[in-house]
Image (tube, rainbow, N blue to C red; front, side, top):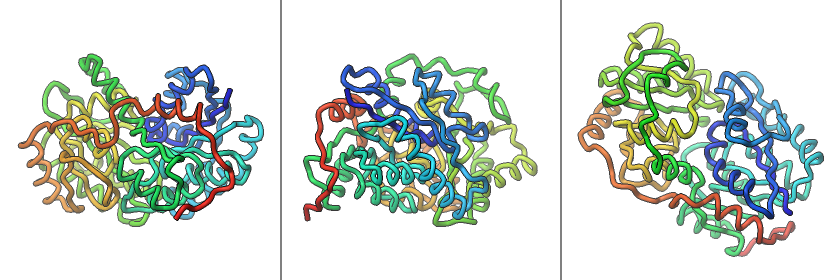
Length: 383
């Protein structure tokens, strides 16, 4: 039986690998090991570890590795702290393969720890392009990884062009789409006033049109986050439609965005906006299926949004060049541009579903590949 270790460092990590974790846990030839780390352990980011446990996964270890400050320097230090702590965890767990997710700093720490210890590395969501440091991390992890699970066809082609063996590159789709497909198949009438018991701000009827905002710092534009979020919030206020707003992730610049959100609440009427630290994945997806428009720079607008058909306004450079569907309207950090784009999406309404990032069965495919695949620790470039 192969032991597969998954390190969860954030809410985005978890939603991006949950279906694969479940498929691994249920597979008779695999044993799932879970390590909770970084912002997934902290209340200020919604205590994602509690959601992990509620979903039936028991973390074998917890790694506190997030250095306070959310600056480029603390981001680098957090990576280093993770690199110091994770080898001890891997020595204790003795995994046969480590499965790492995407492109965040905790992904880099996981990658370096595993590969220096000669533990085979499997990587999801490699090969994609975007406009920030995430892309550099993503491509670097690809060159360390032994098994690749890209989510889209262009990502698969790019991984092979980077010199990875085609037989090691498995086009499985995005595990996040698996969760979307499940939620959309269920009754979507479970959202109601109880949702607003968490977070702060206004309370409104979810049966009426509402917006969603999910905006994160752009690490290569550090210092601009407060101005950027202010432009978005002012555009939303001018539109005048009730809005659900999510707190930013833990990347460098998070404090700038959080400060901008707090200042907005202090100086403007926020009775039409409700702010959440975190939302369970199924609730977030249900809201995406209902919202009149998703605004910000989250990849969920591009990945899940294409599958659901959610009208989305993508702001700024964080998702530059990422493959997308017709549901996304791109604008700069300008309240007038943002407002005009929101209005165009409201006028357009829902889009047809486009399976750009998979069909809802990625987790099962990942588990099956991990059961049967072989790898060579010594990698060879094929170009």
